Length: 450
Image (tube, rainbow, N blue to C red):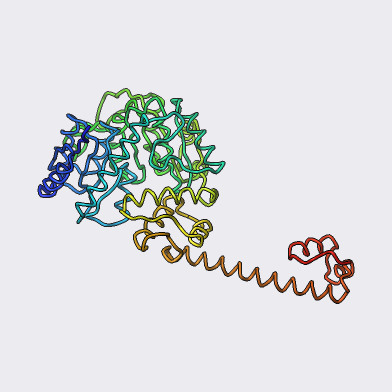
């Protein structure tokens, strides 16, 4: 079946050009020249893929993204931005975008990305979109380490239940990925998954965003809004960075959990909801409770089931698998043909501290593939922090080799002086006879003479 695509941009020329190119590739295309028009179109029809500009007058692209996920969770959304910054791209991806395109863009590149995304979506649908106990997301909770096998087992067991979940871990460990996996493998998988970054929305707007408002509730409330908890009804709501939620909203969230209903700002009647809450944080909530910044009763309501994600430095054995996965994925994104990483580069990757965790690893590989010449990623393609680490390791290894040679020469000289008398050699060296024999074996010194 031919894929259907919605193109949203307040520049008519871009809309027309993209639509013409996509139709030429055989897709069914509909356009909207504003975010408001896009919302009306999304209420009336479903699409396989949505391409929308971020910056538009009125309703922006991120609102279109949220509404698309609420009304049609299986649709993929690609955001267009004229601001070529990492922050904009990361925000788009954190909001649930499948990809982002920077203006000015190359139409051939856009067509390639659309083809790849739709083919990937087809594979997921052929797999039934959900397999119990398995994530169907792009990363698939990759890792053969014991801790990652444990996480996958937890996801399998958690998914079938309606209980709230708290996911903890450093930034970049994949907390949202786990949240999406839990939703995808749950009985709610056909309903909305609504992600909210509690630290990214201004405090003055957060209550309205979460619980909604009625028209006239405040100066800028020119129309009613249902709020994201209502949008997530019968589905899953993901409260990312829950530790950033202000105390007065923690009280209201606790009430929502206990009463299973939300009160929109300015409304006199509550709305019943059925929502599963998955929350995440990179903070130590126990310390936040002691400091009076987080409510203990809310913590226990959210922490019914706990999933702790390890930092990448504690599961280094997963790095080769992650590297191979990201290279394959980035080859499609960047139209490159890298085969892998050479031994020196892999050694550097394995020994890096990875303060940014899996996200940092992906960004390092993407940079290397953009700047590299193709074939294998080498040490020369990696950024300075990794090459300096590799140099330090090489220096340490060289020093160790020198030390071993000096130690071996000294022991041989002592043995020659005492005519290979091991007991006397051990006495002169100031070590036990057993330690001497271990050293002889370690340094490959023959022990067949008395």
